[in-house]
Image (cartoon, rainbow, N blue to C red; front, side, top):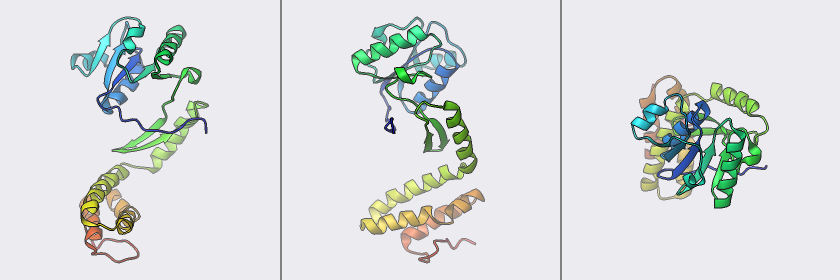
Length: 221
């Protein structure tokens, strides 16, 4: 395994994106969703960048990259179609000890970004170590076909249940058993049927001990 998988908390951190095209736009939108403060450097921009700039969601420097653009940055992504610019960004970032990703150039990267399947707060990452992005996209499609939006809702309920269990169930092994019981229960099928309230009731029953030990099924019919 060449790459160490990691999820970064970028909330409030400065991230530099170099490039103003479609690929850069996708990266910027993900960074905004993660709560990063985005600085965009590009002499030209496409897509919805104008709106993002006008709404003060990103800072735009309308020129070519300069090393001073890295000031204060925790992370940098270069997404241009200019090989010389990409190499310049990578070298400058490494001189400063800033983690750098250059799109489609693994040799210039300190990290790579995976293909993502997102269901609410649930994220499933698919990576080929930069070897075959097209294969990563195929695997992503296959996972996406199996994991629907109900898993995002399941996570939301499980997160709330876990917070409540920490307060009401002091024994850690018992708490783990209850949380496992919920995710292995009929809750996912209830959510697939649009019965979200029943799934929440099941979680409540588990916490209150109002369920049969095996199988874990809510009395909701």
